Image 1 (tube, rainbow, N blue to C red):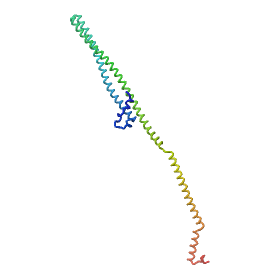
Image 2 (tube, rainbow, N blue to C red):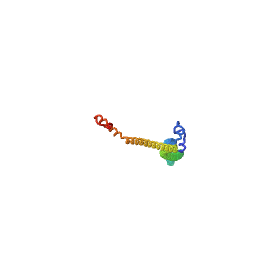
Image 3 (cartoon, rainbow, N blue to C red):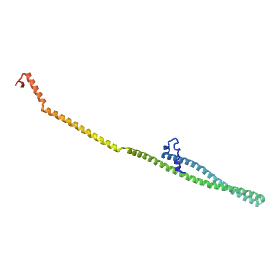
Image 4 (tube, helix red, strand yellow):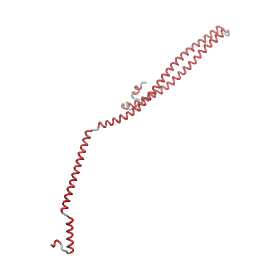
Length: 238
């Protein structure tokens, strides 16, 4: 049996599948295993049938051997009866001759049964070898299928990863990162500038407030108003 011939039988894995699916190594291997299991069933059936024929041939061989011995013994008995004058000599010779003719026919059948027995035994041996070979192939290919499925998963994952890596534009990514860094630096500088402006404005207000003590001026003004209410002399009267 040629397993590789079976593995490349187009159309038996999935008759309605596309070409790429029919050439899927996993599906082809699974189909090959199914074919081998089918062959195993057929070989087991053939083995049982041939064994039955071998048993029948051995039984026939034993039966014809018994007939050969039986006719041989009958011929001897008949001749002895003729010698003992229990039968006429001519009659004894005639019957003994008939027994020997029957014996010869049984010998021919015995020879045929022996030949068939040898042939069937050889067929049984060959079928048993084929069965062992098929069982071994099934076991090997089932293990190979497990390995193949694992390899397919790894290869697909590797292929997808390599594809992503191949499609990755490293130059564009670096350029994008550089632009982002430049933009961030610009934003940071702008924030610092606004901080400086805010600080500068606050410093000017503080200088003005320090130069003009508004709280003291308000207090002086309130004091003058209070004195006027009380009829006291104010700084305006001086």
